[in-house]
Image 1 (spheres, helix red, strand yellow):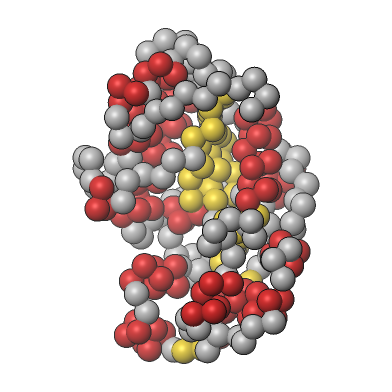
Image 2: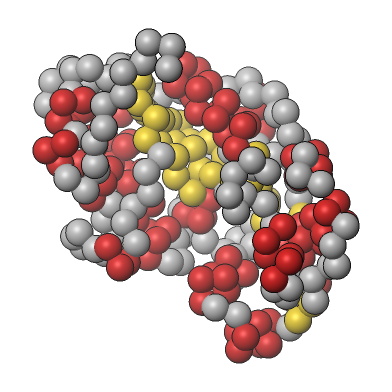
Length: 255
């Protein structure tokens, strides 16, 4: 691994993280908060981010910290264009935990380290298990009809990795960045596009009331929020040149 020695730790076990203190100079924190079935404290807090930040402050603080949050912190924006200045309005417990993790990272930044928050939408990559819509299309899972559909944003995993690296070195102090490509697609159109690329049947379209009767809650939660992320700050401040500016380019690698 090019001379890199990994230090294994578990953010659910605080003692295993303490040896990071004084060693790490630049941190990328991508661990999600616990699910509701894994509660380790109050439902609105992210204990994993708390454990990491406490460990890092035991001794010398890192120069920069990048936290991978989620675009879900914006809540339902009714299809509006969303800039980083828009106030957070989480509508799920999962998104609320992310908001509180962001606040903790910002507070750590005010104590001396340069913190950047990346708000990330749907991540896809053909070389990852479950990283594309192919499996869902093969199952024949329906999507919402056009009049009920929502806008979604995406980012290829490779572009996300490059955004994390750039934020470590170029991110402005306590700055938030939407990390997404240039696509502005409704969810159903995204799956139609993927089906055409893969040579598979397009998914059936159903109404929202029908979806609420037939689809699992985990899937419905993604159909209840509509927003179009703006990525101008990502491009202009971090200088990221997207390798996959549209999902059609990234999905074609799996076609």
